[in-house]
Image (tube, rainbow, N blue to C red):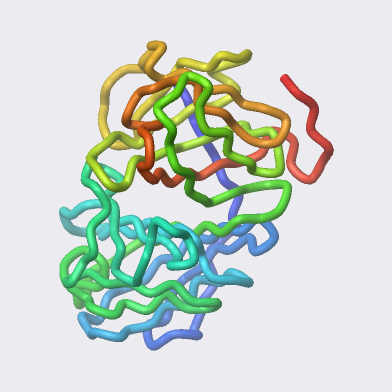
Length: 246
């Protein structure tokens, strides 16, 4: 079994910053918050997220109904080109510009621009997980593939303990590597956030964790195809410290 754990801020507290009062457990210094709210079905509804800057990655899921895990990013990321850019955590879908579930991420508020099913259903309960980068601890970002076993190097500013990667322009899994299951380079043990398959071990998944980021070691299109964009979420093995090579 594998478990990945993020420390938020303990029991949720009421956040009245938005038009919808939310219950927020936030750890601003770690760039992570958990936001619980009840939808009102109103376009333009706002919800406080409790962080000190805009989330760069937010995952929203309806709790008392059936729908996908919708993933939104901040438009300063070259992949998430505009509000409404949407991925699905429980699917392999390519990035789509949503006209029915549009979300804007701000310095203190999540704005539900267009509140259709799954993100702001009236009377339904929802959960949102919000992340932004913190120097030396976490990184939300993107990179461009090169289809080489001497693959793209991605600078994080720390040695990772966890990396999740998703292809955006085409379909692809959400691949996860971590240092607990892969204790030396080259790393090839992956799990997928979007399906129930067992751990994979294959040269197609080769990746190195380095002292200051990670490097692709595969031509596999799902993580390293020439000219294609990928998003990633990475967390440090030794937060806020000087990291050594593996």
